[in-house]
Length: 149
Image 1: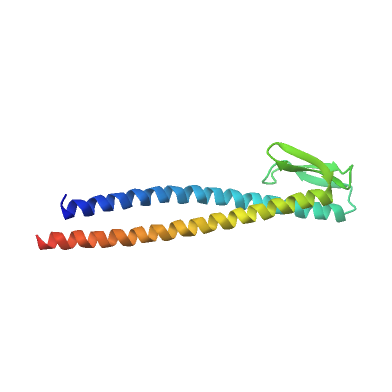
Image 2: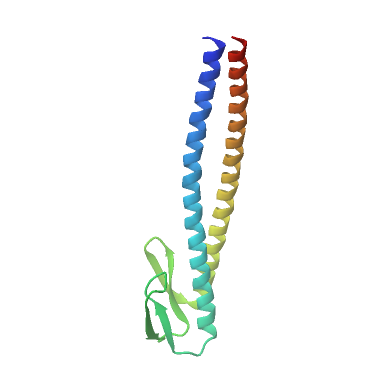
């Protein structure tokens, strides 16, 4: 195998790795967006429960969708009890205090996941930059060999 072929082969391997890392970055970015959305929603639910526990209002508006396109007016029958998601398709009818603890734990877990993904993204982006530099070096070698011919 000639030196030129070896350089080409090395460049192809680096290009394949770079393409794989690009796809992985896209997947992680999507996952990060989902985590950020879940964090916003969990924080909003927590804040709403705090307001609910303070308030003396018996009637509230409840959004029928995530974007607030439609609402329904409803009366609160249990002032100190709510239904909170505990994962999957499971929910718990519990006190506002316990529901707040559950949401706090969920928020902490989401924040930890976000940190881990951001760290992973940073590592991948650093590796992609290294690959670019290696490809530039290989391109320089190829150009030098072509000039010598």
